[in-house]
Length: 252
Image: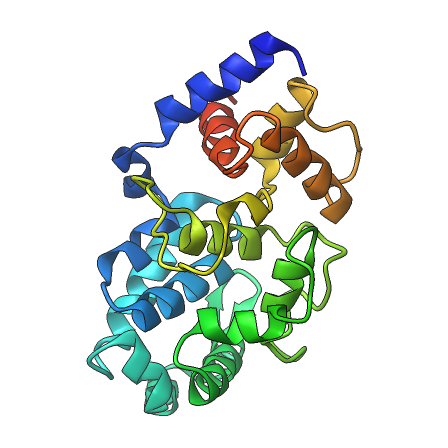
């Protein structure tokens, strides 16, 4: 990697990883909570919905989370008390929630989250029980997160062949510490093992800067990009996400 590219990435990361980033990003929703279980639940649902235009994502999340709190005192209670059953009386299973999601897909996700929290105090502990027998590099952390959810849950990948962008983003929110944006509540996971969330902006700028040579946006590309980002930020490769995404959004 050219030194000028390395310096550019450092400068862009400092420019865009600020508290102002939260204002226009779905990370705003888990940021509103203090209890780990609420942060995990809201963060996972927000990342699950993170398809397409950020304004549309934020509008959908804002409405959904507001309505959830009309049925329960917290997101955790909404899940554990099965408040989504009463919620479904006003939101039939076949009604569209967002893009290709129907409310049935949301209820399937809620039921899966309930099963996780029935067995484990947090999603972090659930994931690391899965991770205990795996190596902590490559796709294994993401696979351990996938393993928590049954295949019937629409929108959660069944394997690590795809880029798994939303899962990578969720894990970035949970694991990156000392960030003005990310929450860093997962204390047992080293951010150096995170994988880069690969969206269209990150992929485009990554290729322009020579960080990506592969043509398809899949897990192989994520691993290539993450490897190159570690050359700039060895202990925190996802800091590059702010550099590439921030520059990409502001220079279309």
